[in-house]
Image: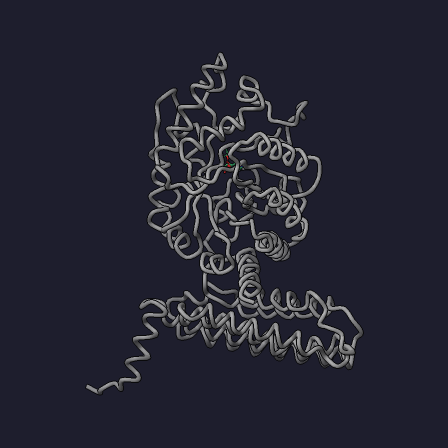
Length: 530
Ligand code: 9MR
């Protein structure tokens, strides 16, 4: 037998530890894709800089097409050695990644301020930095231990150099604000398409927890589901299993089977858990609660329900949506005080919200306690009413730690897809009260959006990027939970059978929405590293 040199043995052993025994070819392929798209970003920016100087559009188009063709070929070659198919399925297709990047380059260049000559200088300065920022992702694919410090070094040196050397054509003026951020956004798009790391890892690096709502019977029946949970998800919410109806169907009689199954999935992850939800006046509330005859009877149910449900998992659940949807539903007639007209509100008064929070705090002093609401991601009377409610709760001393923005985008209000800055401002408004904020039920319906399927999916990808970016820009925004993962299980399908609201399609293929999320997380990771 031919003896292997110690060097080869060492390299193989090192690569095994870094990548895990089963995904070595996929890792190598991912590293290659990242390096390829990094070079392409540099080339595209140089072409754009030249075009800004000479205005020769046909020449630009030819060179862009050549760059994209090279990228596509290199992508295919990288995938050849990976028989598992993992590298192919975890990144965007080469031609899609190329056209997304070239569009982003053109948009970035067009958005820079200054004279044409100054912009051409800035764009060419971005070229080498873009390459380096993207390549820093390769370190995470190869060697998890040293990657963070390598990325921090790369990012801070490129920020320093970019800021220290403004192009001559900009007449010595400092690099315009936002240029470095534009670079990170661009690099994020490239990394989002090329890397094979999951949302879980990128979210961790960006400083936010990526979660998903699950139904345990769906996870158990679908072999692909647990794989995605392991790779992409860091937090679980029970889509229905912890609601009052399923866990407490009769007075004092509990059934925790489905809820326990969600906790078991979270333990296996391991995943953080969001408890959803203790008090929801509108739905999945058993008849005995709805028809409670007196304040005392209802208060008795509430006390028992909160203490027993929270007590079941003794501190394992990190956050509880103590009260869900306290505002009057958007499709219902308005109420005099804007609060939902439910049995709690009718018998206990509006103070039922603070009362539930106090009960929850007593049952688990360590859990973060939330109120969770829909349609409050955009400014307007609904957000104002919610804000006033939250202020009242805080000033009355109710133990409130966080606010959940459900984020059923495109649905509430119908057909509206807010810009990133709008969502960011909304999150900051509540964060400025000293609260944590999370996006707790994110999906982006296309049911009210016209256009071809590919164009709508691309549009949806950008909206996912906008929404996630908003959270990454607000330090108090600690997590984004998707309301499901694959379109085939989405709650929206019961209303709109052809809807495609989530980041994975019916066959668990990653959609532009998935890559949009990764782009936002990767950009945030770069921003954070600097
Ligand atoms: O996705 C959930 C769906 O399966 C249930 O039928 C429905 C009623 O309980 O609740 C859905 O989840 C809701 C969440 O609990 C609260 N915010 C709105 C969500 C979508 O309706």
